[in-house]
Length: 280
Ligand SMILES: Nc1ncnc2c1ncn2[C@@H]1O[C@H](COP(=O)(O)OP(=O)(O)O)[C@@H](O)[C@H]1O
Ligand SMILES: O=c1ccn([C@@H]2O[C@H](COP(=O)(O)OP(=O)(O)O)[C@@H](O)[C@H]2O)c(=O)[nH]1
View 1: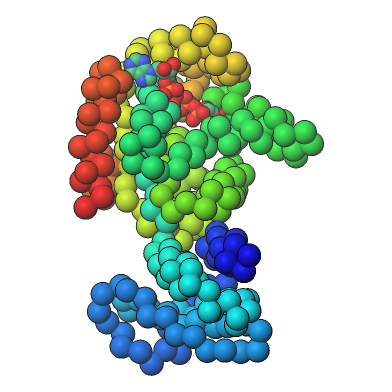
View 2: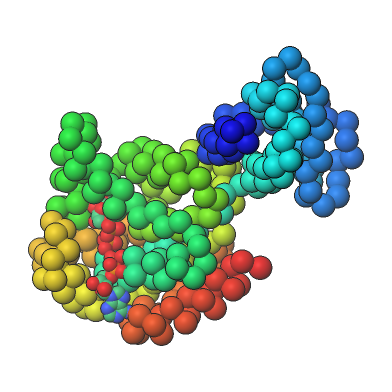
């Protein structure tokens, strides 16, 4: 029972990171060496504080747990897992490409094989738009129909919430950042909270993209933007606003271009080669 309570608590703590407090100068342990956290306990009434040292950072984590729980055999293992995930930032890969390039399709393949959590910015916006009483519903719908881009504060907070809720620490962020407003907003709010691995760039011709989206619309995607008129605008937005973001990452050697005109299984072969590089 106490172990269950603790696991739930730990999950919450990892998700919210509310309890992780960086105290660089308050730890007198060795400041170098492998990033294996050292955990010390120090009983403070009914709460326990735990000091952690990893690489060149020291952390102090306060856990509101009953001291008696420390006797539980599963506790130290759970605590070690908690500490490891608290000190390592979540991995993020951005997935970019034109509308219909196959981003969602390949993300599904990656999730199945590698266990990332797939967060589609467009899907999160569609969910928000459909929420009864959402104050952003109309604004989101307007942008989607016009093929323009929703302000970053909305998208970034939906992404951050979804990351927190998932409990995972490996994410594919699909269809974001799409313009400089997205990029700046993400960098300001999130860049120091994640370990950014790079961008999977699905490069696909306009005609192939449009045909795929029209087919997706005709086979019942239910998306208000899978029609010829909106698709033209979406592609223009992609060329004018998103390509410069991809170029920005290319210039830093962080974008991995994949030919997405090929059949889906061939594209996935190439994706796997890129992931092998990204993960080492
Ligand atoms: N390599 C491919 N070849 C042919 N059709 C594809 C390929 N990849 C995806 N599709 C199809 O094209 C449509 C758009 O793919 P999707 O993954 O939803 O693209 P995106 O997320 O980039 O908008 C879907 O109907 C999907 O089944
Ligand atoms: O970060 C994002 C992602 C999506 N969108 C909006 O959602 C639409 C659909 O995006 P999605 O990624 O679902 O589809 P894609 O165009 O890549 O097929 C876009 O045209 C934009 O209007 C947005 O504003 N910001």
